[in-house]
Amino acid sequence: MNSQRPSILVVNGPNLNLLGLREPGIYGHDTLADAEKLARDTAEAAGFDLDFFQSNWEGAIVDRLHEARGVANGIIVNPAGFTSTSITLLDTLLAVSLPVVEVHVSNIHRREQFRHFSYVSTMADAVIAGCGIAGYRYAVDYLVARTSS
Ligand code: DHK
Image (tube, rainbow, N blue to C red; front, side):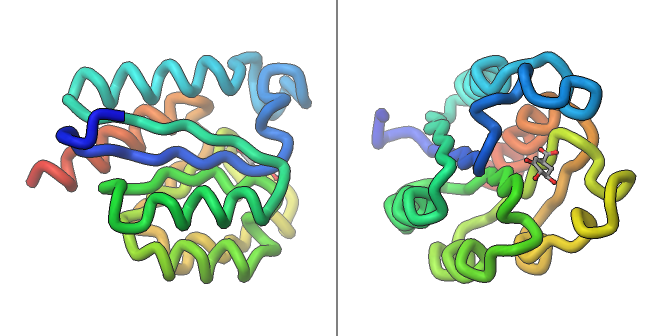
């Protein structure tokens, strides 16, 4: 990463490594690599660096978010299955203290009731759901505009 440029960290939670393969009727056929390319191209066009991370392990996600503290300009997080369960992830995002955009590929509000509540949404600056992988691009646009204004 070029430290002269502003940067965005994108963090993806469990099972998103299987995007494009898992439940395509819900999540579509685009892969996480497609989402990464979309986010990276959008960031680079705006002069931003972008780090893209996925883990199925909560602790690995916590560690990666800690590394962004005081370094990145904003965070995009798809908490996946940790959305409705992880006070740890909420506490981590609060501790890291950066602008946060929460992204869900699917519209969680049109799905089962247990997916509707999000700990992350209680602190996120913006929430994007149901736009497919385009949500990652919109999230980058938001953070670029916010950082540049
Ligand atoms: C991804 C998941 O894995 C689910 O646990 C969430 C989210 C929805 C998504 O739409 O990207 O409920």
